[in-house]
Image 1 (tube, helix red, strand yellow):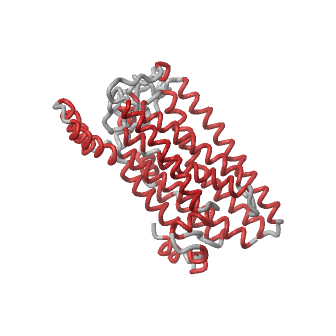
Image 2: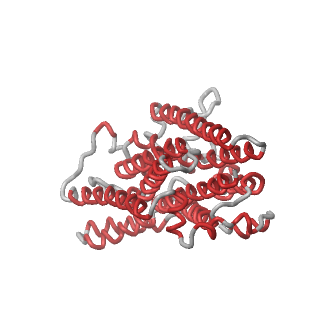
Image 3: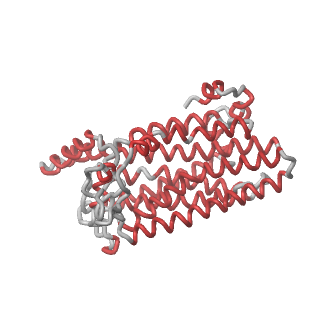
Amino acid sequence: MCPLVVGNAIGLDESYFGFDDAHASDIFTLVSVATGLSLLRLFLCFSLTAAFFATLVWADITTAERPFQWPKVWQTDNNACYDDMFCEPSRKHRLIRRPGNTLSNFFYLFSAMVVLASSYSRAFSSENTCFILSDVLFGIMMLILSISSTVWHGCNAMWSHGVDLWSMEAVIIYLPIRMMSLGAFGTFCKHSWSPIMASNIASSACLFLYLVHILSNGSRWKKKHDQKFWHSLCPFAVRNRLPNSPYVKTKKDDTINTLSLGPIGLFEVYIFALMPVIHNIPSWIMAKKVYGSFGSVCFGRILNVSLVLGWVYRMTERWAFDACRHIKFFGEKMEMANKNGDHLKSFVWMALAAVLSPTAVLHYCTGITLTAAFCHARSVEMVMLQKF
């Protein structure tokens, strides 16, 4: 959250933090420089994203007077897992059952379009095309995430949950793989390798590792879906993993239930809660030992602040600490207003629950985090390409 303070504490001088001053004076120009997209193209990405979700809202409004039926094979009537995970109140018989958790995927779709447009633009530029293919794959996985998450939160279709989790993990792991591969590129160049050969090897390794993760993890989630892992409850909800939970039980042969993750330990809770701190450690080590630059301080600050805010508030979600009492209060008020026929009050309470839903806030914040993290990775890459 404070790159300059942490940087000075570990011995980084001003030369590590010169990217922003050298390339731009405002955030919009800085995004344009990092992505290789003009402000007009960035606005086009925003407009297309807005058009998609505006169409979704329009479709939801037009079905307000009559029940909307999703395909029966989607099993959208099975709310067991969803209600076990999320606290935003549901609007039955609507296209968008939970507007906050659904429409907040705007940020993922916008980020996916920026990454894909940036990759396309750089592929046909004179710039070194390092990581182009893996960036395209990253953009595609983010696009899949935005669509599957919209479907999952819009109607809780069973098939979409596995795709949502699969693509989410693929999106989370990509940028660390990319940054490590960039470190390998720098190391090769320092040992007198040709920059072109080093770039080809590093980018190929990045693409290979990412593909292996996507395929192996996809197979894992497909298997869990076939086992109906989340069809009757949320197996990884904290309440379902407490030692006295009826779902954490042993069989006659003393083995844990095959559909249970086993009792949750404090170490696992701490690791999960501290993820925003832990993910920074390799970045600082690589910046000092390999990159020779922190990259953009602006993007580093944005990605860390947004990640911490979203992550901390998300821990109050129902599947985690179940501490979001105000969302339950909004839901009760919404139901009361509906019974009294007061549609305006019902809308106000629904909007408050939607905007302050922990998962919706996570979507806002991590959507910003992903865009800022991609721009930050690009800023480090640009510095290293100039060096070699």
